[in-house]
Image (cartoon, rainbow, N blue to C red):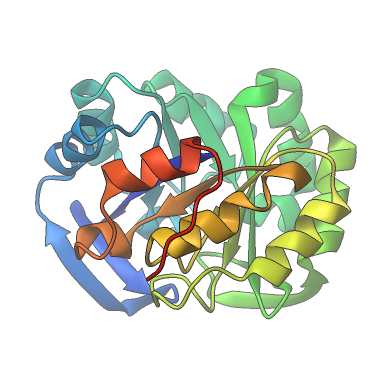
Length: 248
């Protein structure tokens, strides 16, 4: 299993939110590219970047920060936030992003997801963001009546090759990942998943690693590494090693 550090962007800064609330943000850096380099120096093999402003407004808003990150690091970058169409995906891939992430369009504009999958295949990741098991869209500002498992099944049928699954209730809360929700999603599809939300310590990494046989490819961590609760290098080592115990 791989551990992927998050670099969340708002107003050109590196921030973290609590449960997706834009008004509950903590600013960690005015230099997102330097933050990205810090995580790569700690051993990260992938960076997870989110344009939070773009997620809400529906178009790329932190372009200069994304470009700076892509110039600064040599590891692949996955980017989400406001990518609604095939052309949006093309735009960010042209910036140097390796994987583009579509979320809202999976529910609201599945034809655009289908177009993007046809054009870019495995370079497109589908984000399944859920609140109490139901899909949330538009930067998590709208919660729908569609279950996450149902949307994941629809996207797999269109040809999606990878999902990022975020549990909104635990995101930024340091309360531990929603293991049951992840297990349910993993059993509903046959493509790899990346988990996001709730990681707070090495014990959470170990608990997530137990889901590897079900198709869990990795996990995203943010607040825990920014606040020093989780050492990224150690988390990467534990995730890649044979099963071992750990406590929070």
